[in-house]
Length: 269
Image 1 (cartoon, rainbow, N blue to C red):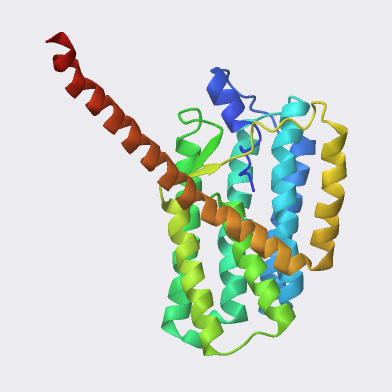
Image 2 (cartoon, one colour; image 1 turned 45 degrees about the vertical axis):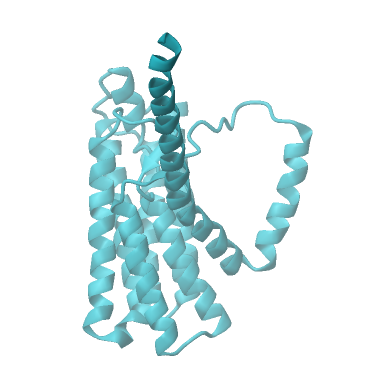
């Protein structure tokens, strides 16, 4: 779910340190693997192998989450790695999901289908550009707008689930078009999403945490496409819910302050 911080882009900018200009093999190897997975998803989708295409997008997500962590752990952050990672993300999470969902079913809707696919691609590009320019300026615990890997997971999960269950017909394709457009809007929105960046993988955890992980893995293995689609769809819905709760809390705070200010003159009397 978390969007990669581009081979240490946030780490370097937030601390004010200049990143190195060299090219390091290890983190860029994972970035290349993610790029390959995204490109393979496009090819598989064009050949009608939609299950393989969806799996490839999820593999690209894993690679995207690893390369930045590897760069920070090995102290191999670089300007080249940051830019390379951003371009790879555009292919894997911007172009690949759009072409896969178009090849799967949006092509049956004519002009509306390819326009929806283009809107998704454009919004993914805008989302990545905004993320790059806001580095070090916003709370790292939250994303502004749905992260492009999570958006790609929703689209890939939808295609995988529908293909696995044999869902077809115009109604299904219209629903897919609507979901594609809504996911696109969430990417460029100002809604806040939890980033999970404060989750420490190196720290100690209670034994119960490992016990809980076992049923989660079993649940995913029962029906991977449906479970993954449901998980990322719920994450996509968490942004509007979190935003509405924050707005509600702000209103309650303002009402409390206003009530306190109106009560002050009476106390003075």
